[in-house]
Image (cartoon, rainbow, N blue to C red; front, top):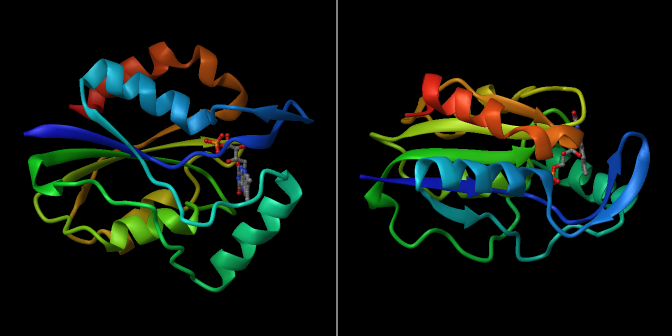
Amino acid sequence: MKKLIAYYSRTGENYFGGKLRTITEGNTAKVAKMIAEITGGDLFEIRQKHPYSDSYMTCIKEAQKDLKDNARPELVALPENMDQYDEVWIGSPVYWGTMPMAVFTFLDAIDWSGKTIHPFCAHEGSGLGRIPSGLAREAKEAKIASGLAVHGSEVDQAKSLVERWISEDGE
Ligand SMILES: Cc1cc2nc3c(=O)[nH]c(=O)nc-3n(C[C@H](O)[C@H](O)[C@H](O)COP(=O)(O)O)c2cc1C
């Protein structure tokens, strides 16, 4: 069976050490690529059809509204054949204590029976927050393994942390 690393991540304005900076690769994307390199798994980016704004402040409001509405934003695509994967790493930034609602759209679209989910996130202080409980609720048939939280400003130095997590729990 193959491994899949599905992730949501955002480019554009983001905060690093209290300052807004425009980035071309998101924090979760960087961690997802490390996991793919270590595990040899396939990478899949969860992209919403109507992405949130590049402006940090606008994105905050858009994401908050979707959370309040319990929205399921439409996705650009789903992985082609989920049957070939039994281990799935799911990564996202923490948005309002949980995952962006597009990740819930992704979770809803898949039959999780017989699969293990390894959660990981990039965050600015709240750690995994309500991600594990959100996954347990939305992907009921999956086994949820222990997760990894990486602080956004530390992703570039996170390779050994990621390696340790995967060797202890990820495979
Ligand atoms: C809409 C929004 C909500 C956020 N909510 C939280 C939060 O509740 N807790 C937290 O620690 N960080 C929060 N953050 C910060 C992101 O989780 C953090 O910047 C992360 O590294 C972004 O990952 P990315 O570059 O992969 O998108 C939020 C960011 C945005 C844009």
